Length: 382
Ligand code: 13P
Ligand code: SF4
Image (cartoon, rainbow, N blue to C red; front, top):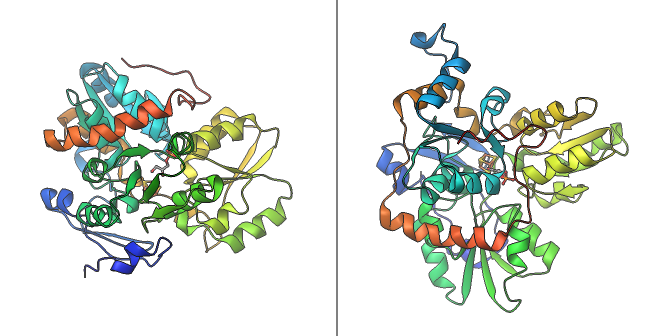
């Protein structure tokens, strides 16, 4: 069943009821349907969620094959910190959403193999249209993108003509095209500080990031009611138990976490900021409240320190693994480089419209935040 957010959801900035939606035009194009409801993720059978190894690829040295194809194709492999350690280790560049956007805009490679989720690969295509951009699994979406169908976002904007739309990068190209300025978690504050105080703002689709920014800066923003299913799953009760077992261990949290988790955080920041803090802090033990694959970079760069994933309601952090990011595997990356599919394609008018809000982000973010790849030399690959 498709249940749209009620009008009350538009009018009440803190409306928080989960709702179901299909992904909309983008998925319709692909002939696929996905439903998200609060924390659930259901993909139709055969969509790749099981990630079973394919018979025909058994026996292949995938890392060596990927390396060979990367050179043959003049490809650059970009990976987000939420990818598996194997993928992070063979990537040319690992970074947060802002770093990855910058890298995608500046690379001279012919092919970008994007190991992240679809909105990230779309961003790469928007910024580098002449390049072939492949995403190992086209089903790698995002609950935030799903929460914000373009037609409903358009109606929301039309209902608030005196507001500008400051929009989190975790959204579709169509929503970017309807926005004024895109932000990432590492650039949101610096961008917000450049917008006149009296300017009214719509912030979507992440109500947790928006709420955090509103509390921190004192700006009164109208929030779209989307959430990240991964960061929503942390348990405050379990976090407090963990803190009691590790007195003094700082809690590092992503702003996609709900306020009851952020209230206990010593640092709130993007994946990149969390990584910087973890490596520069004198603390030997730290609690990490974001997707646990980021701890791979921490453990590599600071093996003498202990990093503990913040728990979900069942007392472990398994429910905090992003099911969308997990769709990308070594096999699918190999196939994507071999076949140059699945490929991101965008209508040119849509791309140009979406590029405006992304370009504003890149201009306004300046060079005040990280460059990616903590703890390892940057291999440019281009
Ligand atoms: P950043 O890496 O920009 O902090 O984003 C986190 C995230 O959830 C990406 O989907
Ligand atoms: Fe989306 Fe959350 Fe997964 Fe990031 S971690 S891709 S915000 S569902």
